[in-house]
Structure formats: structure tokens, C-alpha cells
Image (spheres, rainbow, N blue to C red):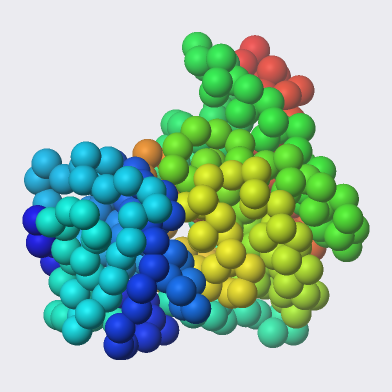
Length: 313
């Protein structure tokens, strides 16, 4: 079976390479190459330019688990990836290059415009997913014990995260993120998607927040062992300032008040069952750090007392 690769990371070198299949999922392969690093082959059909990822054209019936086992040798020769012991190949020769080291614009020495943030927050509340970390914003309890457990962790941790990050308490903020990493089901758990978004929000903020992001990102990269290997891949990229293009464009839109911000938000929200919603939630929380009104709004929205009052109205 020959797969056609749509795009690949800009930094990925040309030439021959050898490696191993690190892990196998239904529509994702995690490959580890000698002296180069990891490359994720993604057949999920998404439109986002995720860092360190090569997207494959939609292939009906494809299930990597039926074709490949972890530890299998892989080789790249003349732009074609071959998987040992199988007929599976991936053709990179016509793949475009995506910019994987995307830098948020930042707001220099300006403060966050709270009106623009509020616009984004209200749009998020109206259009967010009903799964993942967003369940913590629901006014009614879920019938799912897993959803309730996730909501409880979010409500008990995210307010502490915002407060400690705003106060510059790196140790406590890092401990809060550690409680979120690995939380939730899926290939990239909700806690990890939120964390990537939170780091991006910090990076897009003031110089002080960018310094916070630098310290917290290193800590998150070390703590990512508690999560899936695919999630560790993306947390590792976030630790060095590499984020998905659509997420960066959303964060920039909130900072600049771009007129197409609603469209950018919808693009992010469209990723996965809850990944986009969790990432957007993290971006807005990261941007709220150090901004009094946005921080208060998030804290209030996550308080059980507030939710109880809302239910009684």
C-alpha cells in the first residue's frame, strides 16, 4: 500500500534516513529516526499544520495496526519511506513543506486588550465542545463519571494555575500543570491540549508572560512522561516554541483584535472531538495571566459555587 504525503515539517532533512516504528495507532504512526528525531505520520484527515507531523492523503480503510508493529525498521530512500516486513510505503516526493517553528507575535510592552479577549471568550462559550475540559464550564452535571472527574480536576486546578502564574509562582504553577498533563482519554489527552494552548497564550502575551512560558515549558516537557507518546511529541515541540499554525493565528487574533477572529476560532475548534476546544481554552487562559478582569472571569466561571447559583436561577 502506497500512501501519498500531503505535507511535512519544513525542518525535516532531505536524504536517506533509518529508524524504527516507535508506536502504532489506527491512523497515526510515530516514527523515530536515528540522529534526526521523531516524525508523526498522521492519517486522521485534519487540516492543521501540526509541528513534527507529516499529513497523509485520506486513505479509506487504512488501519496502521493491521500493517505495522512497534520496533519495525523503517528507511527513507529517495523521498520514499518503506516499512520493513510489509508493503507499506509513504511517498514524500510531492509533499509541501510546512513551517513548524511558528512564533507568536507577542504584545511587546502593551497590556492585553480586555475587550478583544472578552469577545473571544464569549464566542468560545457559545461554540465550544461539550467534551474535554469544557465540561467544567457546563451549568449542569454530566451523566458521565469520567466527564465529572475531568470537570472536578479542571475546577480545582485551573484557578490555582492562573493565580499562581499571575503571581509569578513558577513552582506552584508547574505543579498545577503537572496535575493536568495526562488528564482525559484519547491520543492527546485534554490536559495536554490545554497545556499546549496555555503555553501558547503565555508566549503571545507580555514579555513577563513569555518568560513564564519558557520556564513552565521546560517543566512540562519533563513531566510529559505521564502522558501518551504522541502527546509528548507535541508538548516537546511546544517547549521550544513550535505550535500548530491555526492555534497561533487564533492567539494572534485575540491580541490584535483581528476581524476574522471568529473564523480562526472555528478552525481551531474543528480539530478532533475535543482537542481544538481544549487548546482554545488553554490559549484564552494563558492570555488571561496577569490581566485582572479576564482572570476573574475564568475563575468565576470555574467555581462550583457559581455553577450552583446558575443552576438555581
